[in-house]
Length: 356
Ligand code: ADP
Image (cartoon, rainbow, N blue to C red; front, side):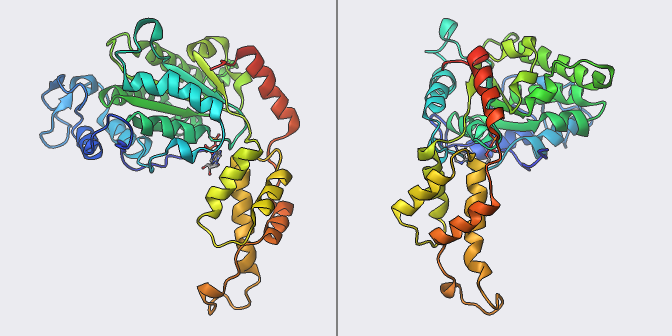
């Protein structure tokens, strides 16, 4: 499903403790295969390294081509995300703040029994903000964000998935604090073990080795692995245990839907009153955040559809988006998650979810 999207590294500096040069520093650090955080472990460049640049010890045995791919395609340079950008989900946000963000900011306070989990599993229906949360965690803790989907590992890197996993963790170590976000984690950590899945099984084994290795070689490793899944029941027990925190990310309630809608409408000329917005929120029970996004986009096309000659119309003559446009759009854009799926999430949450 998801493709590599992010061409360059982003070190967000909006979070606490980040200095304003983080972005440039981090870019340089990766370009030179050095670490800014633990920059002491350096060695002379490898023959195939980039012109006379130093290579971090921890990257010495990693294929430089893979480092390049990680740098260009897996490290994210998407705009930073703040907690306000994520509508609703107050409970999840509060838990994440306590268990992940504070420990990243104040490792001295969160050691020993208070030590943060190395793994966080976000599960729930598609389009509810799991990826947004991953990006927000990285932004807020000034961490380098690595984002990859399991299907990319298993299908794009046929035969080399294991190597890729090793390389990914090595680069994350060098650029820590790091957040490694793995979408569709279920397909990597699946319980199915038939012969066809041999390649996946090897990647899974390597992933678990790397995961367990985080923090063992160096107590100070600050790497958080976030797995996101719409199918938590597919994850086997051994893998599940490693994600010490498992948070349910549900569909938005009516307040969450309202915030999403209002945020999207801010960028658009519209004439909906407060009560009309509330009416749409009532009519969208069961919609995910991304369904709401789709609905607003569809409604926004309404005024355009009534224009006779699109080439000559003045922008100022385009009608504002109205309640009526939303009513029309509701016929096109339906809730994408079924009731029976929702029950599965609730059941899984009852059995394995964390209270926060
Ligand atoms: P997931 O990873 O859970 O499948 P995403 O985080 O990729 O979902 O969300 C998809 C899109 O839906 C986002 O880019 C955003 O536009 C919208 N969205 C989903 N949930 C929320 C939310 N809670 N707040 C704001 N926007 C949301």
